[in-house]
Length: 198
Image 1 (cartoon, rainbow, N blue to C red):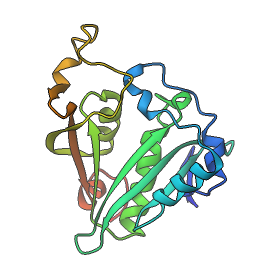
Image 2 (image 1 turned 120 degrees about the vertical axis):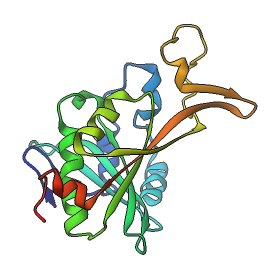
Image 3 (image 1 turned 90 degrees about the vertical axis):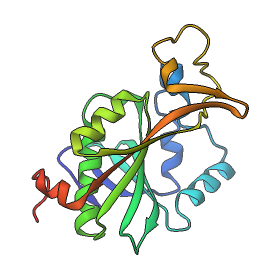
Image 4 (image 1 turned 30 degrees about the vertical axis):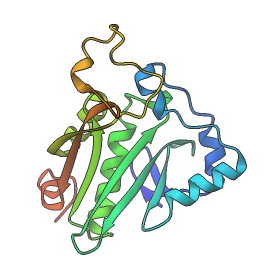
């Protein structure tokens, strides 16, 4: 168990997935692909296996009432480079309350001290401004931008209703692509921001 002030982290268990299915849905269709799927028991086992195989690890985020309000997925572990990559998904009912920021900060303290890695990366869609603000607040910096597949079939950025978002998308012969940002934080940068002791 990894403890914060308002949250704690622990390894995800198979039985947690059914509880996560009760999360609130995103009201904005742009983020509908972040909604937690309604899995059958067989699909739950498959999803759980994928999140915890080949060096991947998944941690659930619990609040003081022991409700699972999100999860952090750790992947692309490189023991030679001492780096990894995370993704975080939160129950939309707990957005804009600082839980995601606290969860990542607590995770980073453990990652850099106990796991003894020196850099952590993440990938975020450029249109996801709320997430970017969270990552920048913690100390992540953009290292590169690139275009990749847009996975949300429920949102059409070229429907004429989303002009302010169109700049983040391109249409290609292979389908719609969106701009992604790779962000990174190093251990010494995290320490320098006084979040952990050297």
